[in-house]
Image (cartoon, rainbow, N blue to C red; front, side, top):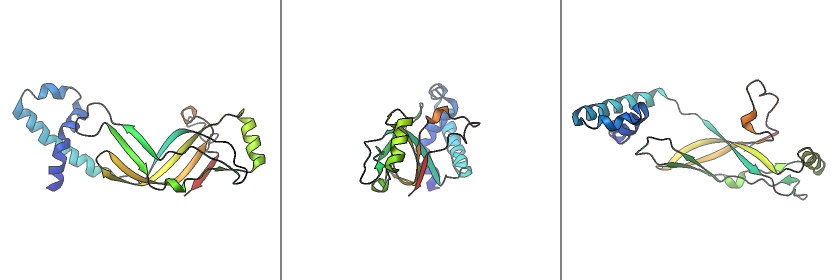
Length: 181
């Protein structure tokens, strides 16, 4: 019963998800609207019970390479310590922004390669410093409403813009380097 009570606060959002702005006109009939809210709680509970949470999530973001570090033989990479996602329209109770903070930021690697590889790499790219980084996240847990913490378990360095990769070209555009953490 506690779960149903907890879901009551999201009933209107779920109705808006299902019916869009028609929910505003439904509010004119108080009894029918409350009946719809009660049904939405049951529907939401059933929908949640049919879902399995993923063990890992992925987020791909553009990044930049800093100057090559000869001592450590790596390109320092501008890493993300958090991600901010906008929630969808028609949401009244849920936060407008959802923040995912990285708990193991200090363990995130740079792009390692020998100096001769780095020279060929930059020459091929015409000295471009842009890069895409795909973070594979696990242990996503809510710290407070709208704020989550997650651990990066894998980083993929990608040389091509991910949006141009089609299913047919998927093998051709694999990440150039994958690092498990």
